[in-house]
Image (cartoon, rainbow, N blue to C red):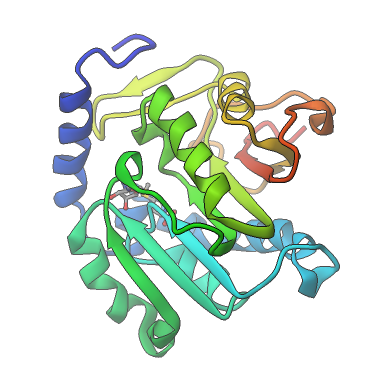
Length: 243
Ligand SMILES: C[S@@+](CC[C@H](N)C(=O)[O-])C[C@H]1O[C@@H](n2cnc3c(N)ncnc32)[C@H](O)[C@@H]1O
């Protein structure tokens, strides 16, 4: 498939079928690269902490939501240790069913678990300090990606932030295996800005094995991007170039 989704139903159906057959394990969440989870979470923690009041920033720590949460890999290791409570939204009910076992004792601090595609999901108004969206936006069409980010803005409470963490490639590529796109950095940033979010900060994830991702991002002043008056978006983009 080239750069546009031609058959939207097939695009979403194929992804749903793919994920239904993936085991509810860390390895399953990370396409067989379970060993990168610790590096990923450490990078995310270092990125997120300064944005929170507890780390000198301005976003609160009451409530976060993990979007495309899977079994709660990020919820467990990143979000629950930093927030009073975490909601999860995930397409595949099987993963949500596996979440209590994966998360363990701390599952008691999970608020709501929504079984829903992000293309159909609307966060409750003004509810979240942080909306975390990782390794899932490739499963949305461009229009749905933008519209979802727009709905996220209404879901943020005062000083809330949307954090997007995803892969980028030199060219937009479609992966027929799980029916997802990998967008370029510029395409990703353009869609974020189109949604009305103001880009607050962008940073590369370092330390992943070279086999995992192509490319990434050019140095630029991200603070110049976007004109959203009160909400901020943050991207954290994977990078193997290390520059
Ligand atoms: C690569 S996994 C990442 C899971 C989790 N974000 C993590 O990093 O551990 C992608 C996840 O997105 C979910 N997913 C796929 N398409 C989705 C959609 N349209 N809406 C919500 N979740 C979706 C899959 O079921 C799967 O749990």
